[in-house]
Image (tube, rainbow over all chains, first blue to last red; front, side, top):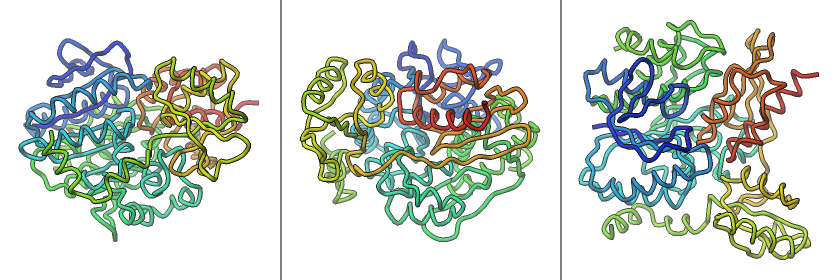
Length: 283
Length: 186
């Protein structure tokens, strides 16, 4: 079973745990409905679309409301630290949570208590916390964009906001940044670097590059990285090899974008609609 | 839980020292000790976990005390301290006190649309209408919230991300926002 953990930008939402569904374009969890604009709802919506195509059970989600004050994230961290050890997931994807090293480590303790260690994917704030804690290597996949990759490559930076200039200047040399992230043990076992070209790496050395279909507008569209993480999550849950899933997810996400004929003003919900058709053409 | 504790720390010998490095903490530097004490009281009263400590060698100026605080909450804390007229001389990460915020911007011109990126945050506007059409990137929970507020508003009338955001991602978006205003507004 697959679990996705993250936040929604509504401070009134308590910790919710339940199966996710898409109803009339909205994310449905228990009796709640959420707009799919970007962030964790976009990731979950993409995963739901992909799970339907793959004929897999829909993902279980653990959500809390947080607008950046960290209160909802801390409730969610507490819930996970208490409950995860007794749960049985094959894949867990962590997403928008307020980065907090102490809470991150407590969640990792809880995962160690699980009977079977799940495959661990981290993106967004939880990925920042994983790097800051020095525990990046405990994860199977990180899905950074280029700015976040520079942060992973900078062994000194506690957040992308503090990435040093001499590393920032290396952004056109993605392979260099990937190698540096691995050298300083700040990368997961595999990296899926999303951007104008997507890079898939599992250790230092040559990465696989996906750059077709080429839709440069997608970089500006909020949520395209989230949908990519959602798709790779579902593919891995279906049993696909991690590296192959990362490559296929990158192609599917680009193809869905291509079908949407995007401009930089396109909204992510317009791309999510095309994921099933894109999967049918790629798989 | 005890077994998990041992399994966790068995993986890497350096884990304990990594935890002790306080990698997610920052430092607020002030001119004098009385300011430090006032700030400590204000932040503790508001529920933040802060502590007063001696400055690292890189930050020794005149003041012999600094305040350690949760770095990710920088924007929220700085906004509060501004209200009390207590802006710090400097904010720095504990682990590398000489690190500076990003000052490099990447600009992508899509023709009708213009995107500015600061660190991990991207802001895109329609050059014809000057309306913010997208916000992307980032990983802190205020990003989806800020995006919901900003998208669809004209650049000249949209609220500043630093007025609504709470985290370093919000701060980075504010940098992109101001860079965009400099490029596009008279």
